[in-house]
Length: 282
Image (cartoon, rainbow, N blue to C red):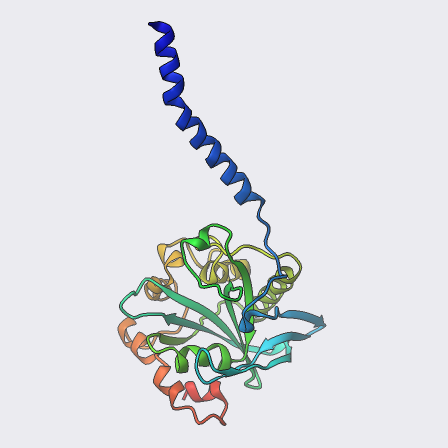
């Protein structure tokens, strides 16, 4: 009787052992995956930017400057931009809601403005391969690489405001505390850009996103400036965090500021010849 019970126990335990073995094998395989910069990328993620420093001057290579007629119809153009680190005048924060009915989900972008009015944006994104679509669940399991897309405002902000039918985009001027922190922020972004070109990283829906990286840059420049909050994981909830911590300039109440900061209609009326950044700020 005791022998029979022992055999039965072994039989019942077998599926558990197999399950544990399978899970261990899957975990090992998952952890063995390595990010790469050498894949067949979609056109708008094809090139990685790099920064070449020369004293106060920096040349940002592979800045995207696409002419978007729609999200599928565009003219490709990649340029190099020279900017001076000692002339960073303002930093702008862009908050794009993909769908206003799903307020938790949003994308965040930073844009840097020089004293002469030149502007350059950085959108931290999933680097997609051809035929690949973003899925937030897959984004937790080493499915996508991370990319810092440096672009002109007419590209990075224009494609969102002029070509995406559902999205709503807000533009805020950031509140930068401490002299020289505009420059330090830009340098922080550029150093990380170069690091990614040499050592690729996995995007992670929770730990390595557009907003978590922005927070890291801000806190690197000004330690403790942005506290831990759910809004960092769900950036669509960030307006109250922005207000509470004096991160962007507010005009009136938070509701009034949100309404005034919408730039989609202004962007859609752009004449195609004037400076896009000036136009959306009119």
